[in-house]
Amino acid sequence: MTQTMKVIGIGDDGQQSLLPLYRSWIEESELLVGGERHLSFIPEYAGEKRVLKGGLTALVEELRSETRKTVILASGDPMFYGIGSLLAKKLNVEIYPHHSSIQLAFAKMGEAWQDAALLSVHGRSIKGLAQRIDGKEKVALLTDAQNSPATIAGYLLSFGMTEYDAFVAENLGSDEEKTGWYTLDEMADGVFSDLNVVILKKRRESPVWPFGIADEEFSQRKPDKGLITKKEVRILSIAQLQLHAKSIMWDIGTCTGSVAIEAARIAREGEVYGVEKNADDLENCRQNMAKFRTDLTVVHARAPHGLDQFPDPDAVFIGGSGGELRELLNICCTRLRPNGRIVVNAATIETLYEATQAFAAEGFETSVTLAQLSRSKPILSLTRFEALNPIYIITAWAKKVEEEKGGDSK
Image (cartoon, rainbow, N blue to C red):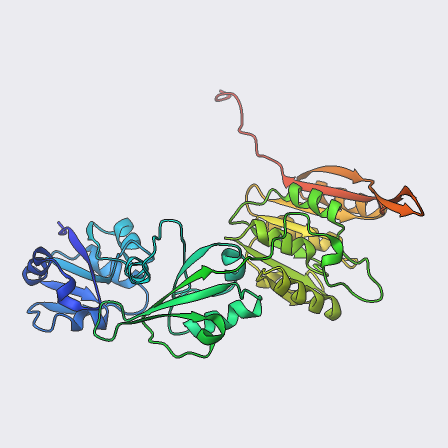
C-alpha cells in the first residue's frame, strides 16, 4: 500500500522557511522530490533525491507505486498555480503550504490583496492578457523568464495601458530580495531576476467602452467605409451567440474586427479567433484590437482556409463567406462544441436560403431574425429616419438527441 505523501511549500530562504515539524518529516523521509533549486536547500539529505523536470505525467505514474516515505517540495503555496492541485487529483497527498509569492509581494507593497485579480503567465502564453487586465484596479502576475517584467510592460504599452504603474518584487525571502515601483516605460527598459512577481496598480482612469461600441470608433477601410457589422446588428448577433467568460469563438470574415472585439470583451477568459481575406481590412482589425485592448488571434486567409489552426469553438460568427458557404458551414457544424451556436449574417434572400438549407442538411435547428433598422438623421431643423440595409440574423444549433422512450420490445 502506498504511503501518504507530503507536499511541502518552501520559500527562497530555504530551510529557514520550514517549520520544525516539516524539517522532521523531510529528515524521516526516504525519497525527496523537487526542483533542483528546492533540493539544493537540503544538501544534507540522506535519502534518495529525485529532480522534478519537465512534465509531471511520468513522475505521477512513478509515484503511484511508491511505498517509501516521500516528501515533495514546491515553491510557496503548491495550490496557487503550483503542482499541488494536480498531485492532489492523482495521488494520496497532504498539502502543507508556505506563503505564496503573491502574499509576500503584497506585504512588501503594504497593500491588501483580497481585491486583486490574480493571473499567471508563468509557463503560459501571454496571448489574451490585454482583455483580462483591462479596467482592473489591481492585478498580480506570476511571471517567468520568457514573460519577464520587461516583456509584460512592452506588451501592455502596445495596448496603450499607460494608466498602470508596476511594483516588482524579486527573489522574495532570499538575501537578493529587491522590490520597487516602476512606470511601464521604466519596467520595459529594466533587467530583473527570473524569480519575481509583478503587481499592476491603476493610477489613472482607463478608457471605457460599454457593449455596443459606436461604428465610427472603429478604423475602417477608406474611402469605402461601411464594411462593418453595424452596432445594432452586432448587438443582436452577439446576443444570439450566448457567449460566456471562457468561450472559444470564431469570427469568419472578421473585417474591422468589430464583432470579434466585442466578443473578446465578454469572453475575457476565453479565446477569440478571426480570419480575414483582405489584407487592408486585417490591418484595420489589428489597429482596432490595440485601441480596444483585445488580444485576438487573426489570420490572413480566405475561409475555410486557416480554420484548421483554431481550436474547436463554442460559438461561430459568419459575417462573410466569399462564396464557400456550404463547405464553410459543414466545417463549422462538424467542429462546433456541444451546446454551441453558429450565427450567420445574410444580406440577401439567396444567402438566407443557402444557409438554412445547409444547416438542415447538417441536422441543425435554426431561427431567423430579420433586422430592419433605421437611425435618426437631422435634416435642417427637423429629424427623419434613414434605413440601414435589412439583415437576416440566422442562428443555428445542433438538435438534441432525444432518449428512446419505452421498454424492451419483446
